Image 1 (tube, helix red, strand yellow):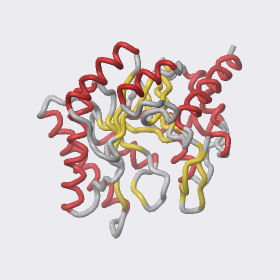
Image 2 (tube, helix red, strand yellow):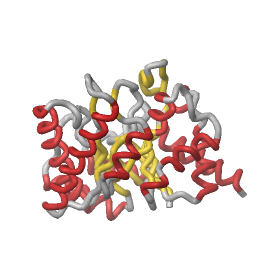
Image 3 (cartoon, rainbow, N blue to C red):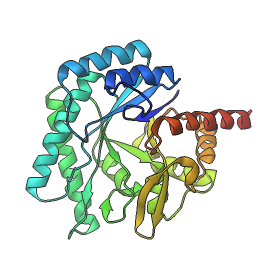
Image 4 (spheres, rainbow, N blue to C red):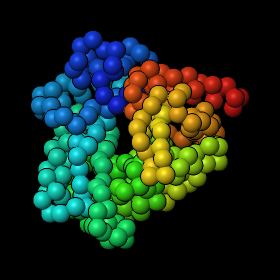
Length: 273
């Protein structure tokens, strides 16, 4: 199954609540939505309400924890980040969300090997703590577009291989930018899925947007049509392999590019016939 939605309440939704965002998402013909905790948390009551509405609308929910996360920094940053992630996961559990997306942290003075070791240890502690609370919503580690930040495709997959139950989030624009425009052909997108194969996923969470970049990686998001990543090739790869995916638009024009992604997906289906 393929679901598509937006990262947050659709921009054209007049009523700015997550509940209304879910209903609006359904009316747009989209089937997924991510609730973002970048500016604070919702109440447990609101999370229960979102779950009820989402189930009625057949909209699959996802959660993104605070963007300001550092799981490889000093102890103070790790403890603060852990509290934010745990709160996000608790609400995601109540909401019936499928994944909690988390960022990683800057390398700083650490070597890449040491950063990987610290990330694995801290994510494992997080996972074990959540399991101890009966929270089974998987943590999803997002690939990152800036080269000074931990989170290359290879690093994210390695963490997920070492910490069972943690999944990679394939942010295609970030992978593209970090690789200086590496995703140009269908085979390039296939390499991304092949890299994640060792994690044995039956579902892939994909973030999608246009992106500008430099030699240092990602600069900023742009609408899909203004980027140089050929999204139609991604859709062809998904269709040919019959991948079970959810695509979340992180574009500056959120739901507009979510709908555009659906158009490209339909086009890829026609090509495959």
